[in-house]
Image (tube, rainbow, N blue to C red; front, side):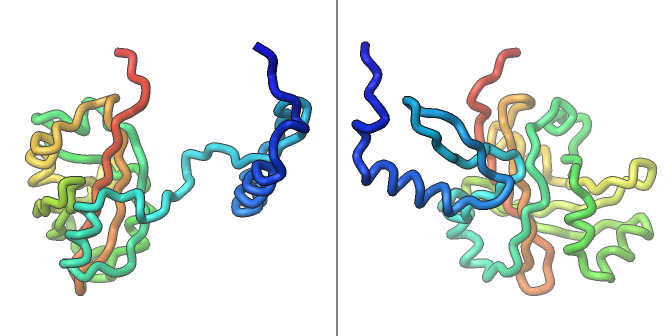
Length: 189
């Protein structure tokens, strides 16, 4: 099968591609040749933040009812065995610094005093689960527990199969989270 020549692409194709590439700036670009023509395109990056429209409608609908404000992406990770284990019953928050910066001073003091902060987590189906945010002193890491196993079961989350995004926001003064879940494209056990 013969490849089309670069000149056979319509000017509209190049205009659309050029506009898309201009939308993404700086170090996010890569250049390659397509049918002899040099093309710039965005690099795929782990830390790109998707538009909010990519959050499931159920989450967005629940958040509207909660009058959410100040949403911040805390982390992305592929779930591990310990994250979904009934015996562990917790989710490690791998980017604790981001979350720590979003906490109120009184919440930080509670965690430093080995207490917990009551939170609510909105799952991809729009369900709300009460949980506790704790700080593990020995590892200096934040975890969500006391309700995490229930959320794992309801959403049928699996280790190395599901990738999550954890977003934080406020409902009044209450700390809340959105849990966005996507199935990994390729998984080979």
